[in-house]
Amino acid sequence: MDLIRILIAILIPPLGVFLQVGLGGAFWLNILLTLLGYIPGIIHAVWIIAKR
Image 1: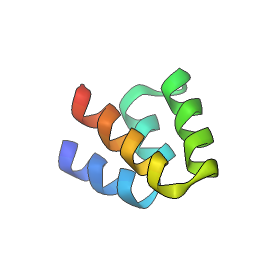
Image 2: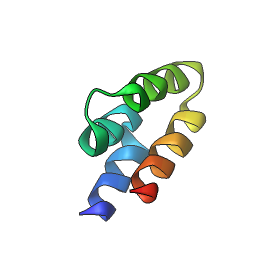
Image 3: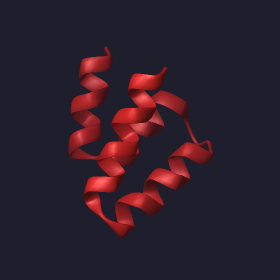
């Protein structure tokens, strides 16, 4: 299941984080990072998914 979440996180980073943690602070941080730059959003999303 984590492999699917990582693939989703690469395509749409906030969705990958949402599937992992819901509407928490990490989700909103990921939206901000994705808006500032796509690559930081991906890195954060993969890190959140791999951490749990």
